[in-house]
Image (cartoon, rainbow, N blue to C red; front, top):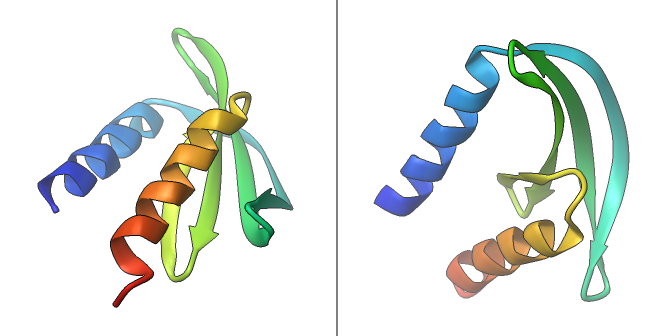
Length: 85
């Protein structure tokens, strides 16, 4: 649980000093399942970046908008941890 809280705190910290410049809704597919996604672009003093926020069975994960492997890993981790509830 501490690891998940640390990731959430990091995501909040990254976005706390940035302004959202755009937001789009789409879907993301992983191993035959499709998940709803919100992709946000941010502008900060250090430049711009984008993040995907993917809803995975009641949990929201944040991952790189440009690296599908990052998103795959985040979905995998959530499914490993919570699919067997």
